[in-house]
Amino acid sequence: MYRLHRYASVLRAVIFSGLLLTATTTLTACGSDDDPARNRDQHDDEGHEGQEQLLRLTADELDEFEIGVEIAAPGTLSVAVTFPGEVKINQDRFAHIVPRIPGFVHSANKSVGDVVRAGEVLAVLDSRDLADIKADYLASLERLELADATFRREENLYQKKISSEQEYVAARQALAEARIAVRSARQKLLALGFSESYIVALPEQAEHALVHYELTAPLPGVVVERHISQGEALTADAEAFAIADLRTVWVDLNVFQKDLDLVREGQPVDIVTTGGQIQGRGTIQYVRPIVGEDTRTAIARIVLDNADGRWKPGLFVSGSIAVDAVEVPLVVPRSALIAMDDLVVVFVQTSEGLTPQPVTVGRENETLAEITEGLAPGTRYVARGGFALKAELEKGELGEGHGH
Image 1 (cartoon, rainbow, N blue to C red):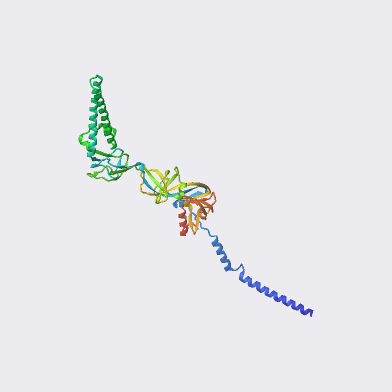
Image 2: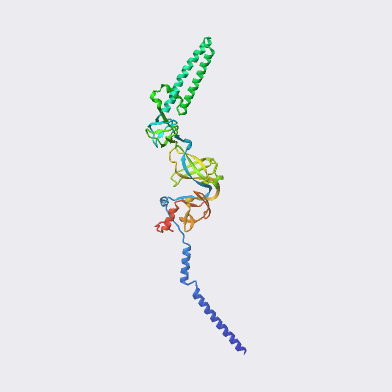
């Protein structure tokens, strides 16, 4: 009996060993590291993951692509707000020319676009009313001269007890009235724009000149409007010309209600026309204290130098006002930021070549951007020309000396 039990135990051990060997062989056949197909797939995956986009460019090629390389460093990031606006004529240097007296256009000497000097004649009118005013002035001068002579004679006679006091007083009163008449006639001429020298020389003028009234330019500038023609009858308040001194212009920015606390007089403003063709810089001279009922905006006005005539009234512009400035650990030009495969990258320069490096962008303004991750200070990166590098990578036909 004992031998029978021992024989059964040995038999079970042999059977179990056979099953284990069979299972081990099966596992080895299915999952061995020596399997060529498995090794080949694994090698392909590792090769794909290790693949790196890289451009190897010579110094000449960098110049050809206009690549600008800089060193990543801290910087100051200005926070700015931008407002729409328009270039306008400087109303402090703008004049509407009216005759001040009715008359007929004898001649019109200037047209729209003509450059004029202060005091230059724009047109000449023939005015009967002006002739009457000049005649009154000349007559008052004659009466004053006569009254003065009469008074001197009566004064002399009165002192010699030849003339009565009543006659003396009457002569003195007539002289005073004559002086008042001269001043009144003279003031009428001054009100019409005649100078003191012109009035003094008036008695020497020829009679036919008494009807002529010259419209003159009160300031230097350009004729921007003309509303008269030869022979036309003008009223005293008719607008004949408009002259603008365009050596300076206004730039009126529309400041939104929510931004009024950020804008104040004396702030510098960067101004650019729509499309970016013309750029300039000025200072806010005036902030209108009233918000427009229709637009709900206030006006911030810049007086801009325009000696070269670039800023044409009517141009639409935008003005950027720096309202804050912060120091950031790393700042790059926005031209360095390139969009690739749903990522923002910066091309960095290594010993191997140029390669795109994904970065995280923080605060931005119109020209600069803060980098919070992906780029270390001191790294050489492409600040300009990154789009050309992206295009080269996307073409995939870089030739000898290039690689990716």
